[in-house]
Length: 487
Ligand SMILES: [Zn+2]
Image 1 (tube, protein in one colour):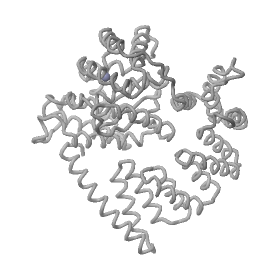
Image 2 (cartoon, protein in one colour):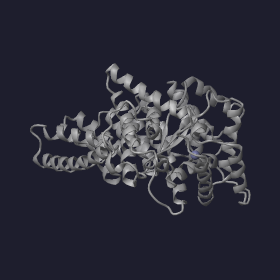
Image 3 (cartoon, protein in one colour):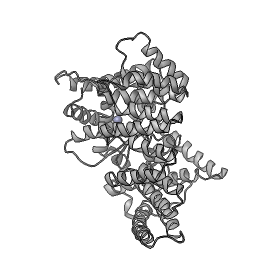
Image 4 (spheres, helix red, strand yellow):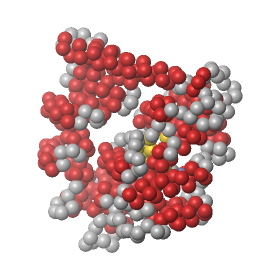
């Protein structure tokens, strides 16, 4: 829910009328297209909230998959530029969106609606194109000086809603109603010109990256048809923000026609990600039934992703033994996969067979040392088994190898807490917040760390040095947000 509101804030606030707000003067930030840095500041501000929303999908297999798909497309952009963060939101509504500052979110509902990987790549390519062509920044242009203040007003209202007072809740509702009213009028839509450009750039990117550009056409066509036949519960907001017309589809068709037809098989990672998202959505029993039906008349060649999906849904239904039985059929032979090992180890841990779980993790990590699910899972199981010293050693090794993985620091913080090492606990938690883009929370944790009594002198000076460093970064960030009236 929150994420959708924030998207509304990021995308639409530019057009909110600024009446009833006492607006400070914005000086020279008022009349120009947003600069790269300004875009990033707004994007980071919004992403800070998005990342802590329960609907934000933090699963390393899912996020690594969309990241690799997105980066493959981005690598085919001409010229390849700026990094984009790709993430998934647990939401059945069919939607995908690009946010100012270079962040692209995909709803699970949209991923599940795609029928092949090229279709998914088509949507992502289209969103990437909106960012590369700076369409949002251009939408901001010409809105006058009130745009940034409105964005700030809305962002503030939304932040206030995180507090518990009912008054702040009302403020938020008012701001959201304002935003949706404007959305309904269609003022926030990308223009047809933007859509045509995003299609053109997207199709080229798709072809260069080795996907089937026809995937983009078939997906948009199906969406349009489904919408016309009212197959969606409500019209997808995707269709509202990205106006889809008969001419647009005809244009796309004309564009892909001369391109050589190519059959691009789906990657197993795509099939697996889809199965996992499906198995994880709705009610567990519903999904058990779905996957059982998928597998009903397939006794010989059972698609591995469906067996995996069934096992995953069975685990959610707490039918652990049954889940293990299904999973066992795909764990051996040619089709081995780290995702299967991760699930197997989790099932063993679920049933209290900690030694077996640890063995499964260690064996699997020999074959797939980079798989983040296995890396995190081993640490979690060590903690669960009370083997804290081993957990700390393992996390220490992994933090050195992949210092950007926020989850590792969270696990480290838990491990230190279990041993009563409070200074280290706060330091690790600070690093986790830092990597999730929350500087203020990181500084808070370091302040707590430096107040721990009887701490080791060396560790204390490390914490103090890091605190000074992050405080000055925070000051710069606050300055930038203040200039944009975001704080
Ligand atoms: Zn679009």
